Image 1 (spheres, helix red, strand yellow):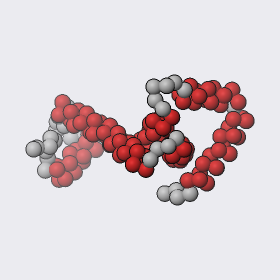
Image 2 (tube, one colour; image 1 turned 60 degrees about the horizontal axis):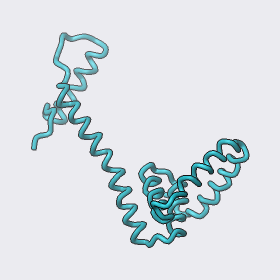
Image 3 (cartoon, one colour; image 1 turned 30 degrees about the vertical axis):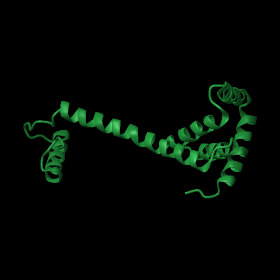
Image 4 (spheres, rainbow, N blue to C red; image 1 turned 45 degrees about the horizontal axis):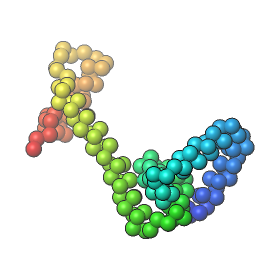
Length: 146
């Protein structure tokens, strides 16, 4: 875990400067996009920084977290506002996992396990081994019972 966030921001700032020098047109476009995202009047600067912080946490971007945590404080976010934002980010990070898990279970319900077929080598042997291990671990159940 990184503990020196100020050092991370400084190191990334140097990297971004080098990238700007190496790809000026790309980074100018990125800068223009940042200005446009920070423009507008529907959300204030604090709300925009809190949204950016939540997204940074959800996508697990350490440097983004450092930049937007600092930006949130500079924009006037309180400790409670940042904490609540981080709670929502954690929820949204876990929420999609729940949705994908539900889809995986639905797939298993719709497509029952392979049926036993004649003995053969190769893939069939691996499938039989999987089923033998699966029955041992789960008692042969394919669906969770309530």
